[in-house]
Amino acid sequence: MTPSLVHHLRVTPEDVLGNQDRGRVFLIPGSPARARRIADRLEDLRTCPSPRLHDVHLGVWRDGARTVDVGTVSTGMGCPSLGIIVTELIQVGVRRFLRVGSAGSLQGDRVPPGSLVIATAAVRDEGTSDACLPREVPAVAHPDWVEALVATAREQGLAERTFAGLVHSKDSFFGREMGHGPLGDVHRRYMAALAAAGVLATEMEASHLFVLAAIHGPDVRPVGTPSCAPDVVQAGALLAVIGDEVGFVPDAHAARAEEDAVSVALEAAWRLLAREEGRTP
Image (cartoon, rainbow, N blue to C red):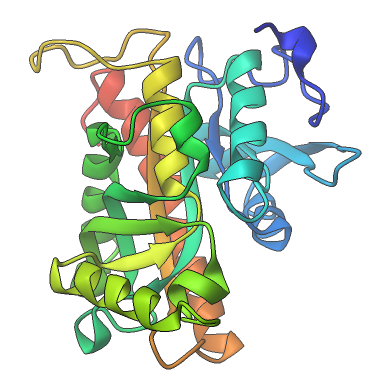
């Protein structure tokens, strides 16, 4: 596929250039409002409007002498929508993606609402990624993103309420997670099994993002090589926990967790690039 097949976004290969020859880092929330809040943190901002309302915001994150060329766009809800947005961005040259999303806790009081979850891998309980890879292939986050996110959470004093581990990606919020309908007992047993296995949180997009990275730009290199090849697609996910088995937290509490996630995401993007360039964050 070529950039000429980009249909849902109004973005070009020139738009995603930046960070010297490494390209822009894209933060991809599901929510358009969260994409705009990320954009509000950027300088030199410009927006590429989309007829499908997936507007791409481009700018520079700056913290003193530290800068990162950033893009952000909403992927919408669920893996089918994310698959369109991320694939079109890959077609125009984006190679670094971080989902900045929200999730519900599967661990009760141990991972309470207000926590942050760094996904190391995702349960593929969705059908979209089956079109890309056999079910036996796991959906795994890029380790460089995990490392950068963990280091940033510690640096920002958020280590005590930040967790790293497995997350669950699903197609159906009301059916699978909330147990609505005649299969409710089946879904509740399934979710309980995930919780018993230590899965931290449930969400709707990370697994397909990780699979797309694997099929479009797998990272095969010795552990002693510090920098990815230009064609490697690095994908990670950072989730603000805004609910649990009881329901959603009040908007003010959710907003705080989401703002913390955005702060960690932006600095982690800088750390990711600094590591590749041989600079010590």
